[in-house]
Amino acid sequence: MRNDFFSDTGHGKDDQSIWQAFRNGDRLAFEFMYQKNIHHLISYGFKITSDRHVVQDCVQDLFMELWDSRERLTNVHSIRYYLLKSLRYKILKYLKANSMEGLEYAEYEPDGDTAEARLLREESGTQQSGRLLAAIAQLPKRQKEAIHLRYFEELSNEEVARIMGVNYQSACKFIYTALKNLRDVLVLLMVFSFFDNLL
Image: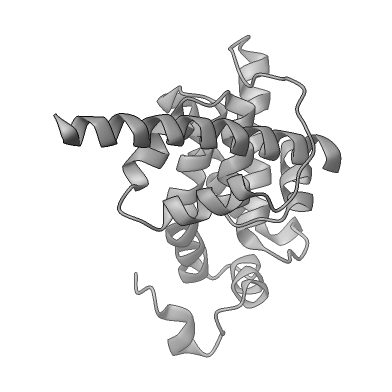
């Protein structure tokens, strides 16, 4: 399938046009939607559970159900937001039905555009991305999920809250504490790297 399908056919690249074409049974629109979002969905799924089969099965089921129910779906503002929220619901429902371990819950502190947030943005745009990913991997699952949605999917705090099924303040707490934890881990990794280079 051509990734430039919508620019070639006059549909436009906005989510509303793609979604409407999909709802009308346009298979190329459906494939375009799948290709554009599949990696984001799989990556996000692993922030909820580390079980590869659960993630893959839920993503596959999500797209199958989307196609089967396309005529009954309402309009959406953001396709990716809709898919992420739907996948989260589907994975948690599966985990609960099968008594499997899902997300960890905890209390956190307030949010803001902090130095930690700026550090995360700067770090993710440098050659040190491997170091950042290693630090993120050490976070508790709920913090990891919030960071992924906020900085990798570039959703607002309000959207993060709605997807995670928590109130705005709780989402802010997850993000803020995750940023603080990342800052501490990244500082340690930079110190270790500095001393390694001296040896």
